[in-house]
Image (cartoon, rainbow, N blue to C red; front, side, top):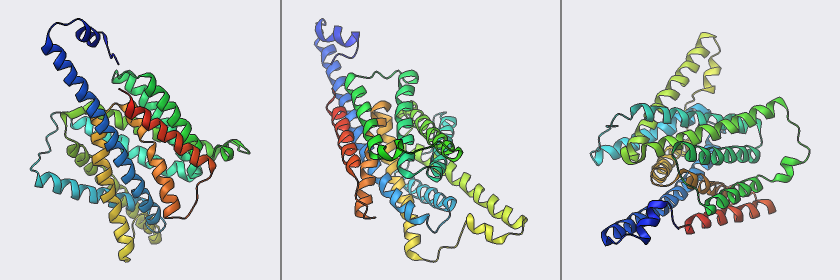
Length: 335
């Protein structure tokens, strides 16, 4: 496939063997990085889906803010230990502001997930979030990063979006649905999540290889841990000021069950692995491709739904899974 005029001229008219050889190596390197990016994104999606299972089990007992606080605490310890072991410094080469903005985008997106699921059924919230994220990422990648999209990528994106829609059971979404105020809040939160998650990914892509992925995760964990520590302390302080001491348990509780504590700690471990692979995949692979491949996390979620919770997917889920698998296959085989 010819990517631009320079590629075509060098390939067909250049007599310089060194130029042609250099071009071939460049093309092979680009293709290798893309495949690596796809693999890293899929692995990240697997661990993200596994973390979602732990979150669903933990949030039935533990306050949501405390669950997120545990996540960032464990991530901070793990990435900090990794950087000390490999003697990596936290130099950002003047990119500290961009890392801070990226972390803010990511934390806002994570918070909006809670509101989307609160006001919408999980399936519908998933549709809104993944439709929004994929579309925003493709548009932003084309506008801000000047990424070119092939016909196969367009087809894969459409197939992936259709697959996500089918996984959410469109029969229930379309039939007998009214747009209440609560529903509008849920839809707005879902679209907002997609927007901020896309902005976060674009920021990582914009940084490229200038900042190591471990440094990106380090600052993300530092900012996230700081933000949720402050929110929890403010909530506890407010509960004491109004004299309602029981309210403090809505922000932080003492975990005495060892199994529940292990689940909370596993969230941070799983998300650390997820962030490591997902961040690296975003750095070396086009954002439009990452946006489509990330839809595979829903497929993993349905597998856990059957294995862990014993809920069998319906006909639409099976067809949707096939659409997403086809979309990923198109991306991998695109040259």
